[in-house]
Image (tube, rainbow, N blue to C red; front, top):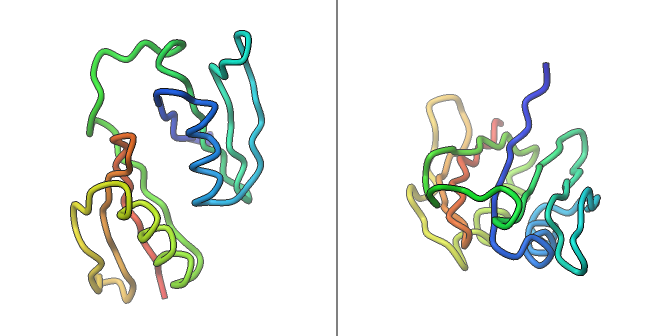
Length: 121
């Protein structure tokens, strides 16, 4: 079994580019309606982040019901992602030294998606 985060955003077409600027990777458009992107994947290494536009997913609420835990490979990448998300989002928990000899932080991005960022030394 493989679990993938499923993230619903307004304006999937533009927001996919935003997430690609944070994580890198390749965007794969799965479904369009005219110029609107309704579903897309962002392939980053071995991970897949699945996205849907609010037009397609029709969420009942926007908010902190699902958090995405990211185990990040390097401290530099950890700090870069933290910086990108915190610049246009909200810091829930600032970077701190975790008991597992690493770093943790929790940030909510500009789309209301909450990310638990971790780096294990």
